[in-house]
Image 1 (cartoon, rainbow over the protein chains, first blue to last red):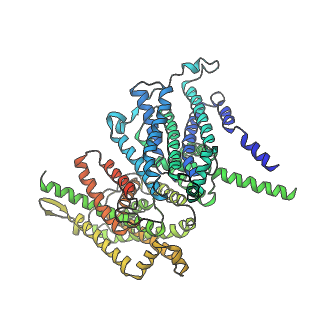
Image 2 (image 1 turned 60 degrees about the horizontal axis):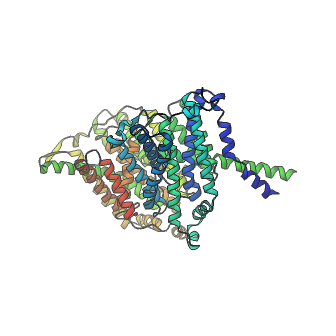
Image 3 (image 1 turned 60 degrees about the vertical axis):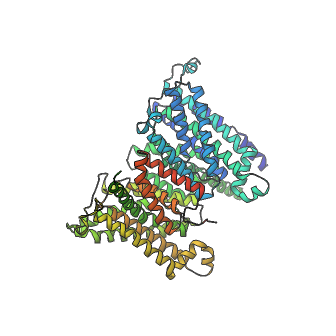
Amino acid sequence: MRTSRFIAARSIPWTLIVFLVAAWVPWLGSRYDTFLGTQIAIDALFAVSLNLLLGTTGLVSFGHVAYFGIGSYACGILMKTYGVPFILAFPASGLVAAGFALVFGFFCVRLSAIYFAMLTLAFSQIVWAICFKWNAVTGGDQGLPNIPYPSFDWMSAIPGLGDLRIADQFYLLTIALVALSLAALRQITRSPFGRMLTTIRDNPERAAFIGINVRAYELAAFSVAGGFAGFAGALYGIFNRGVFADYVFWSKSAEVMIMTILGGINYFWGPPVGAFALVWLNQEITSYTQYWPFVLGVILLVLLFAFPGGIVGGLVAGFGRVRRLVYRHA
Amino acid sequence: MAASFLFSQFVGGLTTAMFLFLIASGLSLVFGVMRVLNFAHGSFYMFGAYLAWEAMRWLSPSPEAFWPAVLLAALGIAALGFVVERLLLRHLYGQEELYQLLFTYALVLILGDAAKFIWGTGELSVSRPPILASSLSLFGTDVPLYNLFIMVLGPAIAVGGWLILSRSGAGRMVRAASYDREMLDALGANVGGIFTGMFVVSSFLAGLSGALVTPIISIVPGMDVEIIVQAFIVVVIGGLGSFWGTFWGSVIYGQVLSFGILIFPGFSLFSVFALMAVILILRPWGLFGRPIR
């Protein structure tokens, strides 16, 4: 009885449902809601890609922003400097980010816990220093402004979507691409490969005993996570109409990590919930005070001391408690 | 290139190095004993600078007040460290490293904004103490006496710290805690007390270096994050948790930064991060550290 309900809950296509609900925002919400929605969708993808390392594999990467930034620059340079259409530039940016993650990751996965975190941080700062100084390619500290929007002629040809503003059309494109990426990441975490990553997280020695090449699996996870972070970065550059070195700075790695943990690293839907909560809170609070970092710090303290499982972890524990109470009294 | 120019680059690099040593030694001690990477160490340093400025205003208008102000600032930050360790950090020791890292990052965010709230975003400065206001001509280069003082203070603290760690009973406890804290606990030693003590000493060093840096650079918001990244590089080069490693790591860092600007102008940032990455790849425990189990 209980198992069957468990399986039923698992087989609900949550990604599709969230996508279908979110797709109504351009018609029901304001221009501002679409703006927030795009931001949340991109951050959600970025955070889920980090969680493939953090939650699924147990690797604490403090430099995940490097691959976000590389994807962002790759897409921006291809589209602006070389006039490559989005349909080619987008997959290319993910591949470039995954490639860099493969190279950097090769060195990182050989190190244990704290050194792994430090080396990922060092690589991300190297990427930042290059982006910040290499004027000829990345625009240096000026960045790359005026990244063009993708062509939306095809979307305008679809009945009902033609009269939308271009920001709304980009929103629809973003949530579609994010939904596809999330579905892919969901499949990856559920696949035998994903299960093995969790085994490695829980007990790397035992995984090695049963003949698993732990480093190869970790490297594969690192590269895949980097690739999806690259997709998020590509969308972010277009969303902000420019790519800047700030996107690669280490404090952004901390930001996405806070998002992921705020939602809950033990649940696939934790990071998107965290992204939603943090983007929304940021907008609400910055309209009252300039001291957003202070508020973020306090949120983080409350999270660490009161709800280490994050929002989703807290909700699941709460529901469990309620259900036990109901069963006891039934 | 003229020899005097090279010498002045060398002296500049050495001054940077000795400041970095004062800051990074606290970071490294806390990591070595408690296995906590304290991002907030840079924030303590920044608060040390602001407190020194504040204490100068309270004490007297005379620049002679510099020395008591420095001491007050360092003691104030030591007290802050005591409160943070006893009230908050203590409860996270059993948790994963990630949570401890994020806790110290939360402190960075909170203290950074608190400093902006209290002291504003403008630049503040403190003048050099009168005794050390002049400069000395060495090999055709004018070296401010204050910089010479820092260049002497750094090695003095290094030797003093090393003597305490290697010769005293308290130092023996600290070294034992960094080797095997469970065993030390089982033997009946007060490991919690050692941790608190280390955190307070480390905070004192952060506050001291923040206060001492005020005559050389102006106090601005953002100096916390700038210094913590440099201090991380230094301890990684020397070896996390290694005391002498931190000293030599600072010297190497200072010289790479000072001469890196000459070799690759504009890429000095890149050169130090690249150095950090190369060391992590080849010898993750640093040039002078030992592998951690």
